Length: 304
Ligand code: SF4
Ligand code: SF4
Image (cartoon, rainbow, N blue to C red; front, side, top):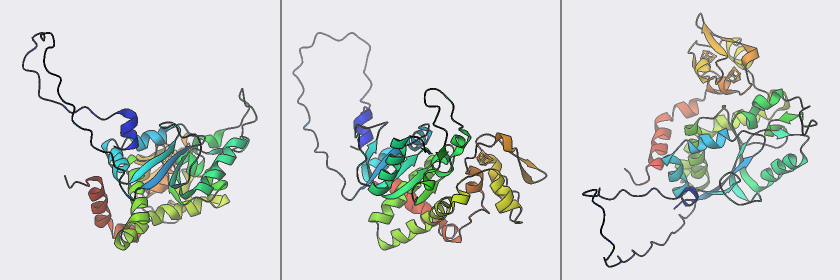
């Protein structure tokens, strides 16, 4: 049983429906022998994953949970959730293979700055989970001046404070992409050489995004990214993916090209990340079927 199964309890198995609604007679039956409980054995070679909550809204964690049964499959087979203040009682950041970091860093909050630095020290792979961790997102608009911490006015993406390995942009990030990154991290750390190669191909563009975002000059995202980096470069093919990915409908397609209303943009970076002409990777696209196959196989370990 995985950690979340323990917390939420396993689903009750449905037994046969009762034959009638007649009131039951006073109990005089012999007490049925309890089935001996099966020994719970941890699955060998799982990776350890933590969720680190900085200045975020917990929507990224909800997005992880939106994998429903898929999350249980991951927790049962590939990853132990060793740290997550929302779901478990571990109070201190442990050593872990993968840290999924949600939220930006408040520079005036000493504890937050320490926490993100400690995360970097303790985690082999740091993932910026969601637009706030990756680009600052809505916290970019913070100006302080609010009771009871009016001095809390500067919020930066985690890449401004520490090195980040992988970005998963989006507000909220896509559940399937979080799931895929978890499975790929497992394969990268525990898989066969072939699986490791596939995991590298899948993660490479998200790592490239992280390395681009960690440069001080590009750590802010904006709808104008698709203007400057795609349309103005003659790369836009008018597919409309950017418009469908924008969580606040700041992009409309006009005469076949995206038009961005900047005063609506919350700076999440989803449009640029979703654009097929932004950081198009033939390494991934050429392996698309293999990657889908490996993820499908991972999510159905019993072959059902
Ligand atoms: S235009 Fe929309 S998707 Fe793009 S950064 Fe702004 S809010 Fe995010
Ligand atoms: S997703 Fe990229 S290619 Fe498609 S319309 Fe938007 S900017 Fe153009």
